[in-house]
Length: 224
Ligand SMILES: [Zn+2]
Image (cartoon, rainbow, N blue to C red):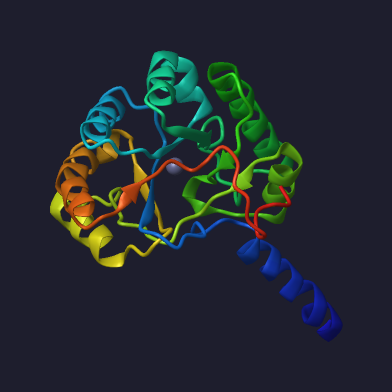
């Protein structure tokens, strides 16, 4: 038992903590805003307009079912120069469904998103931030990097306000930070308004708002 804990557990923990991307390697003031759960018929067009007006890019982690229902919004995201990633087909919780079910969710979303993008999907964000070794293994085989975040402003909480989300983000970002936000019905009244406050502030401070790149060339991520 001690042997098992002594070898397997640290290896498992290292796998789960080390393999995901928590923050981009960055020496400059590059910031990576990410929006989960879309495309949403209200929040996504609003965010696209705000990002465009500030010449900012971001990454949208899309649900396969929502992408299937609103393909034109996915095309709008892509044609504006933003990146897209896999957020499973129907927002599956990796800790509640079997590995087989979760892999089917990831594959189903990948097929839909790749058809719309016309190129391989490189990024995956697990719903609820729930990571399993099986999900990490699937990502490696599929050529998708599992992306977490280092800044979580909580735009999904019932009491969130735009001002709080903007302030929280502004106070916590560092070069290369990945910020987890949402474009879903719950965040419609918060996230676009928060971006209206935050983006001019960031640009005045010299931040560059970037999409996750199609391929990244760093020692940590070169393996996938
Ligand atoms: Zn989500």
